[in-house]
Image (cartoon, rainbow, N blue to C red):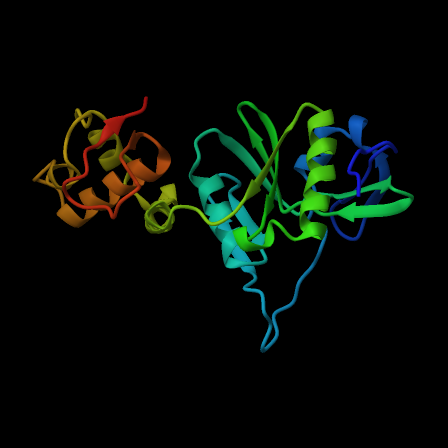
Length: 242
């Protein structure tokens, strides 16, 4: 079965309330409309459901963003952690085209607006990527996204250590919970090259738990970085990013 998208690709978007804008031309649909899109699907929680659905408060968006599986939640946290991501839209639109005489439809999982341009993301467990229907759908979606000069990403299970570290640091993402004076004081300290455990002991006149929480907030916010491919420890070395 071929995947060449010969017919025009159309796009439908759910706006605020119950309003739906249908069958726009994919190539000319305004990005501003997609940025403000509401999730295409709605979901309910029920006993025995197979998917783990929920909402995640995103520091990037400043609001809740939905997910429909733990894997989607992982990608959502990674997007929230990435400094280059400026906005996140869940289930941003419905794509529709005709291939081999049949109408094909697909709802991507996320639209990320980044410093380098939009990224359309589909999340799928690695063991399902070789299923013919999945591979076919992702192939024509990739072609459609690339035709607009955007990037397309299929995201599967990440490094488990990186995932656990990002999940841990996400607990420090809410910037209003931290004393701005303490944040400013730690920003004046030379953190580049210092071990994480030593950073926790800076400013001894201040509460150590509060200092520790701000250091971890600075890690989350990208002010400093460290290796995340192994469990975080006091020996991790911090590096300045700005």
